[in-house]
Picture (cartoon, one colour):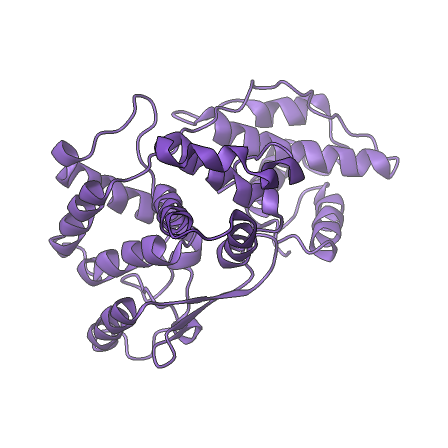
Length: 324
């Protein structure tokens, strides 16, 4: 929690300590708070209360910023203000409703044909002209997201020691909810990752990340998004997206779960058992997030509509989409 230098620094550190004590990583909010702290240090040096002027300067939309991203930025500062107010410190709380309602994304569920086109594009990706081994990383990273149902951030942050190529296990450290979990590779994915590891090891023999960038560090989320759109462009004629909802890397996780649900339900497996399994497999902190996928499966596959009528639905509130 170093790096905070404004008059609000003690209050920001106090908020982060509280969130961490509750078991919350709070990493994206910490980045927003660090940026806010820098603005406050520059424009409001020494000011230890959070004024309306300070808060509203932060609210201003960035060029090309999506409203959902703007909402996340604002929420971090709103939480800081509420924390300060609870301690009796003067703080302006940004009103709810600013900047507007969150836009809910409609996930793109890839068909087998679309997945084939996407991975074919990944297998033919060209080397980067500025160095690095993206042509080795891209095919494997996106396959692991799909085959294991990983969050994109979980895949790119993997350490080499997290992937046990002898046992075929992948350890996901401090995922959403600050919990570790273990997932298991199929035999073919295990062999595929072994071949990748041997190839990338010749370039980065002492690497820490499983997927190193050209400096040997972990890739950024923006790099992953850029690659994904490059693959979509290459497979454009074979992937049909809904208007206003272009596919995202996270949709590969959705596709994985829908495939699991389809396979298990058609085999006559109990939805109650499946919910418990999926919650553990996906790293959900509660089964409400998992039940969301049963609704999603029924939406995209009408033959599974009966899932929505099972008694298990009465056990959980209306599902909400998990945040990326």
